[in-house]
Figure 1 (cartoon, helix red, strand yellow):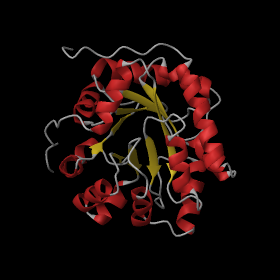
Figure 2 (figure 1 turned 135 degrees about the vertical axis):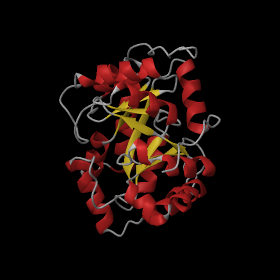
Figure 3 (figure 1 turned 45 degrees about the vertical axis):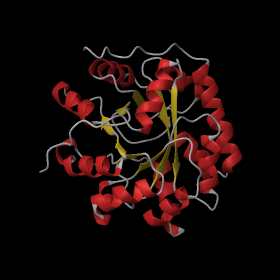
Figure 4 (figure 1 turned 180 degrees about the vertical axis):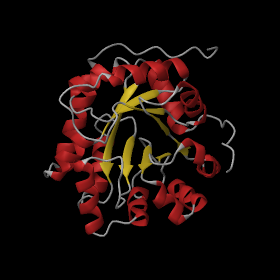
Length: 278
């Protein structure tokens, strides 16, 4: 097993997110399933222009273990229509530079392509960051080295059940931001914010000076503002993807992201960053 890559200079995402945090802006990362419908590239562009600070783009996989029914269905439809990792990256490469793109997929996809080749392909398509939610920290050394070498920020996840010593290692290894998993379970909309959100956000904020964003279960502008009062920002996936499955298209997706942006801008003050001395 290769040791984790040494600390690298801040990349595009971390630099932008730190600047936004310093300006008092809550961070918003909507998620779009790549290959979902013929206008999916236009959807990515539309949500980027509606107030996103980065856009997560899912590269569908046939066994999406962290995803609930909505994103599973979106992945199924995308795969059934012929979506492939290469085709999705080709689509992303057509977008002009702007809001950072973050590829979200599974370790099998990256390993099948070869970690180095996949990281270079992401960079070649203009992707700034990557998330492999099923790749454990103990096995992430080669992936961290490959992404670092390609100039892609590998973002790691921390769950509510992560013990303190492991949490510190995740925070030290992550690039761009640290992804706090707000609930124990799979992606999906919830009627209210889970009690575990406050715990995971607080523990991460005490552990790292990297931006801390929380995802899973955030469905409304009000919930986004509630979570962002505890963290630096939010990731919203299932609520947006459900609208796309229902036919929202680029305009509908942009309208929903604009609502989330307005909710965050009207919400609570920025959560304090951890002192660099701590």
